[in-house]
Length: 117
Image (cartoon, rainbow, N blue to C red):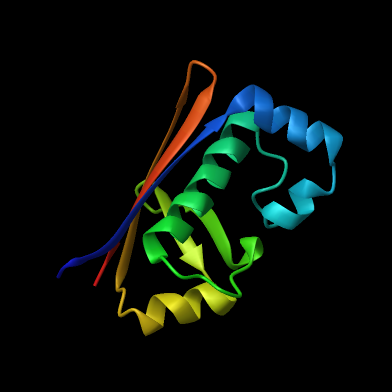
């Protein structure tokens, strides 16, 4: 196995909240039905995870926000589930595993993604 890509993203919670307040439909564009309704800090960390995943993948033409979702894995840790164009990119790059770590504290949310072949 080899690391194919790494991505990290940080989201300012106050700025993210203002963006959602200004554009309420943004939640529908960024998050799947099962992600919606979560607390702000959880939405922000999931947004950061999606941004970090795109960075780890590199060229992501045609990728949609709803092609990525963050779920709780069987061990309670976050997992990334991909579909659509993002799943195609993952397959094209020979990625067999995606690892994600999320955190939020002191007004920020952060996510780190490692794509592994």
